[in-house]
Amino acid sequence: MLVLAFDTATAAVTVALYEWIPGEGVRPRAVAETVDARRHAEVLTPSIGGVLAEAGAAPADLSAVAVGVGPGPYTGLRVGLVTAKSLGEALKIPVHGVCTLDAIAWASGRDEPFVVATDARRKEVYWARYDSARVRATEPAVSPPAEVPAALGVEPGDLPVIGEGAALYARELGVSGDPAPLLPSAAALAELAVTRLAGTAGPPLLPPEPLYLRRPDARAPGPRKKVTRS
Image (cartoon, rainbow, N blue to C red; front, side, top):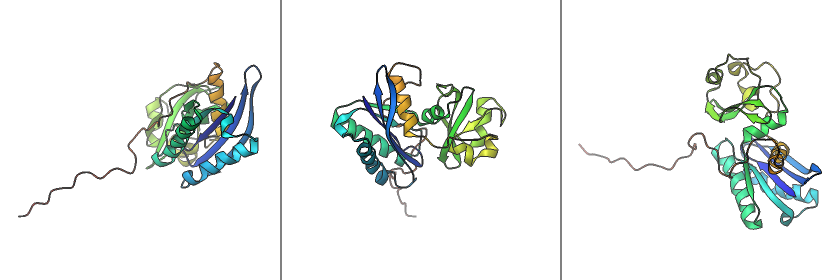
């Protein structure tokens, strides 16, 4: 079973192809990672093609697609989700969503409680608390970084914080240790998805729908105001 995984919910455009053989485990076939917050659309499709070519696979060989559903900025996140749905429809294969924060948590391999925080722009972070790399304890949220410890009922520095948000707002979040991994990896996303498909422990898979925690930056114009003459 070949699972194509990718995430565009952050500045990273990351793609991975993993093979799952029931009873024998999971192995990576190819990975491509690019950090470019402004060129998600230009980078994603060539990266998918490159990963398939490197692995000697064709689109028709895919068994499933796993895609990061955010939370993340509207434009980049939409690129990944539209691409995933298009592949699923064209190839008649299932498309599974994975919370981007869960992918970062999974890659950390941590066994103790911690927080994942990513850059939400507007001087805010997307965040969630985890009991371990496999268990999320809170729903994803968005807020100014200085408000995160209070929302969790802790003091800054009481919990380790990882992710790009931790690197950007270390003082507000009380970050003292290594905040890595900063960005999601498609390798972690693929491993998480396959683990869940295999029926073992891991965060539940989601529908391939965007996890928006606030309205997009770009909005449709409202009705024009009436001009009155005196």
